[in-house]
Amino acid sequence: MTLAGLVCYSLNMKYEPVLIYIKNKVSGVEVKFTEDWDYNSYYLWSSGNFSCDCNRQLLFNRELGIETEELISCGNKIYEVSIHTLDGQPLYEMTING
Image (cartoon, rainbow, N blue to C red):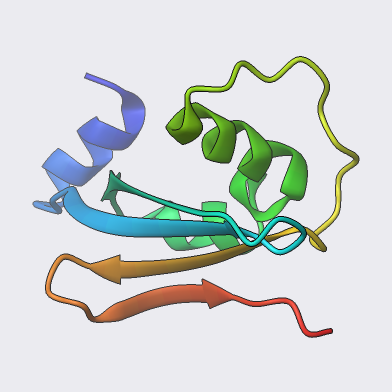
């Protein structure tokens, strides 16, 4: 069991499946996939590793079956993210204006 899993287990917290939408603003292509959401997920997507275009590119390409050979520069100008519970309740959204 991972440390996060152990903490969740000891605090009687659960991992909940969520729908994650990542849209490439340049191409207009959007992917959708399901991931587990836990007590740390909001931070990961808003300020942590998944808040940056370079890591979002990896997840986006994974869903398209594309092997990432060159990472884009870090930033938050290419990929928009929207995360919802399975019944449609919003948990997190990051959009790009312009």
